[in-house]
Image (cartoon, rainbow, N blue to C red; front, side):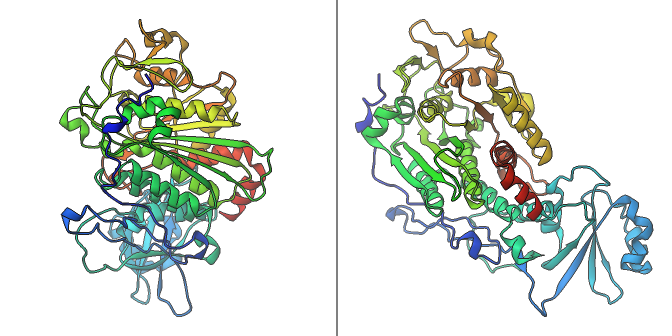
Length: 528
């Protein structure tokens, strides 16, 4: 019942070597670079290499003599004085083009010297969604641009939105490098929270977008090791018999794949953190491809399943951001890297496995594998008694039915912590929506032969019952947050291109700084 009986059936030979590499440390880079970070090779039989590392310049520190054009951020109430900014003729031209300063509206106009300048609409007041500035990276002509905006619009939002809008992903054959659109920033801004946040989100997007044949469990573990080692984190990658013993449910999920599972465990401590500093424990679901197992998904349901490691990618991005800002905390990261496949070694419906906690779990549905991946990791993380235990997972379709693609579901067993996360979401324009851990549904997870089933007996409240399942592996006194994320954009919008994404990174980072790092948060606010 340990999930290890089929270990011999796995092929532990590496089929693909693929890892993520940041060429330079964040503090060294003058230009912010988006990199696909695929540096390995396909199997020898393929006779070709994985596409090379891709770069796209996004931020640049202006140098004397460089040609820089201006974007004027305009509110609807500013139109009356627009002529004094850019000249009456240019203002009249903008009006003839239908410019009303609607948020996100962009129009090019010639200035008095005939050099194109840009007018860009921003909201009249209130919280500015940084994604609106993604329009600039996507629609401005190539060249270097500075943004002149009202004083109450944070540079943090301009930089972050521009960078997220500049993101692209592709593995097409190499072609001539196209001129890029770049935002002019100061040397301080190039290493600001905003630019590091963008780098971290790019990392998550790249990992989620990478095809499953190029990113298996071992590849995801290597990518995590590359990122975390840069900041001096202590790393362990567990596999084979050691994994079978320590994480029996996760191992049982991975039995069906020739690409054996991996668990990444990392510890890091801020330079000013001591042994009494808050311990933040992050857990990520890293299912590199989910076929559904014997409860097979329909073909249409598999088309996005390379994104089922989006929780691990989000956790890795968040960990990187915490480390770049040297938060005064102790940090633990656990990633469950696995593939849910069909084979003679795969888990079967109604299997019963004893978990790390000792609870026996009946496999009511092999496509409810994400909670099996998480529960052993959550139990181990809780043994360290962290001040905050948080997991992120692309866990249920039910959360998407209830909330759609933009709102991650938030389930939490502590009212104060839940409110801190919801408030942070509003502050960052990166909202989440809370769902209840409604105890009345616990009995739906009952089993006649085991302590608990991994699937509800009723076809409703799926996101809640998944959270209730995980709660069984969390100490009742432990402050715990569970985030159920879609991790994907079905269509392109400003700052959010179609494909993988990591909503919630900004909110979680803000909540952690608000809860545990007040001095750091105040300093970051001044800088950004």
